[in-house]
Structures are given as structure tokens and as C-alpha cells.
Image 1 (tube, rainbow, N blue to C red):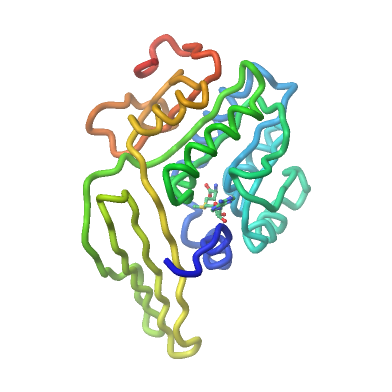
Image 2 (spheres, rainbow, N blue to C red):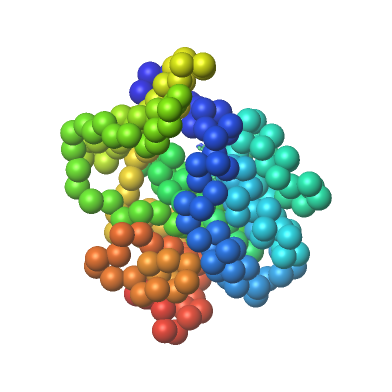
Amino acid sequence: MDGYTNSTYGDAFADVYDDWYHDVSDAEATVDFIAEVASERADLPVLELGVGTGRLAVPLAARGLQVVGVDASAAMLAKLADNDSSGLVICHLGDMVDGLPAGPFAVVFVAFNTFFNLLDAARQRACFAAVAACLSPDGAFVIETFVPEPRSGSSVAVRSMTTDTVVLTVATHDEATQTAQGHYISLSEADGVRLRPWAIRYATVEQLDEMAALAGLGVSERWEDPNHKEFTADSPRHITVYRTNHRRVRPEGGPTS
Ligand SMILES: C[S@@+](CC[C@H](N)C(=O)[O-])C[C@H]1O[C@@H](n2cnc3c(N)ncnc32)[C@H](O)[C@@H]1O
């Protein structure tokens, strides 16, 4: 999409993000999951890529973990500051590939499909490499994404409708490039038209594992969700823990490398 940059999504959605997405995934279970993975190295901080408004980072920091968050959108980080009244989360305005904080981190995590905001395979590979470089030797990289299904073409749907506002979603999908892009379009008599653009490049779990391997990381655990539901061939999403030394920390966990 012409003109789309690292901060476009965050700047476009910051004003509605908490309202629209506060319950988009099980935040409490995700925080439990990250806290458990980080518990072996409680002396080290954790880093969230694309921290947004702090939906996960703020409750994680409230548990006593040292939490650092990176986000490309100043508007998102301003919302995070509002949500983090105790100022517990250390925020960096920046890219989740280039110029990550040095670490070392016990855990780096990227939740709720945020990794797919990196819009081509090269940027996604570079992110794995950047994360591997700032993890502690026994650290973990946790990724949560949907499992993509082949899809091409375009779609239009209604997200919400009231007597004075309708929100439409339009999207195009390209299976060949594994990309999708679209807009949430708010139409209101009082406020006129507001466009909220988004774009993603999705990757299969096999492709993620290949990128991880190039960065020297291997699968330690894979689950369908942060409640440790078994990951199967039919799972619509996954949460995967990659580790530098390929340790298998939950013997009953999903496939290992
Ligand atoms: C879907 S939101 C997720 C926010 C939060 N992690 C959550 O789970 O609610 C994606 C976030 O990633 C940020 N983002 C997108 N591309 C980025 C990039 N290249 N570098 C840093 N942050 C980025 C956006 O600004 C946005 O805040």
C-alpha cells in the first residue's frame, strides 16, 4: 500500500485499539504464559515487540517483571503511558527489527499476529536475527500468530453499525506473496469518513521455524493457545517458544526441533 510505513497501523488504530481489541485474546493467560517462560531468569527483563497500548505489558509489569516495550507508533505509546499509571513499562519508540534495545533479555515476545506487521520475508528473517542477538544465552523468543489458510481475492464486511456510525472492513489477499491489506472505514454523519489502514505478510509455522533456524533458534514448545491447548494440524493459531539452545522445557509440549 503506497505510503504505508512502520507507524501507519499504530497511528491509525491508537484511538480505538483498547476499545476494539481489549478482549481479542486471553490476555491473562498470555501474561501467565510469558511470566512462566521468564521465571527461570527473573533477574533479566523481558521485551515485547509491538507493545502497543500495553494490553499485555502493563499487567506483566504489574506482576513484578521488568518489562521493556518497543513500538513504532508514538500514538500507541502515548496510550500505553495513559494505561501504565505507575510507569512500570520502559518504552522505546522504534522499529522491532532495527535498533532493538541491547538486552540481554530473558524473553522476547511478539503477540497477537504483530510479527506479521513485518511486510516481507526478509524483514521477518531480520527480526529473528535481531531477537537472537539480544536474548540471553538461555533466553526464549515467544511468537503468537494465526495459522494462515490459502486465500486470494477481496472482501467487504460490516464490523459494527449504530444509528449514526457504520464501520466497514475492506481487504485484499494475495496468496502468492502471502500478503493481505485493507482498511477499517468509519462512516459517520457527525465525523465524516475515517480510514484505518492495515497490512500484513503472513507465514506458516514451517516458514517461521525455518527463519528461526537461520537465526540459531529452535522450537522448544508449540501450543494452540497460552492455556497450553495441544497444537494440532487443525489449530487455527499457535504460540511458539523458540530457544537458543533448543531446550525442551515442557516434556509434554508440542513438537520439538
Ligand atoms: C496488533 S498491535 C499489538 C499490540 C499489543 N502487542 C497487543 O497485543 O495488544 C501491533 C503493534 O505493533 C506496532 N508495530 C507495527 N509495526 C511495527 C514495527 N515495524 N516496529 C515496531 N512496532 C510496530 C504497531 O504500532 C502496534 O502498536
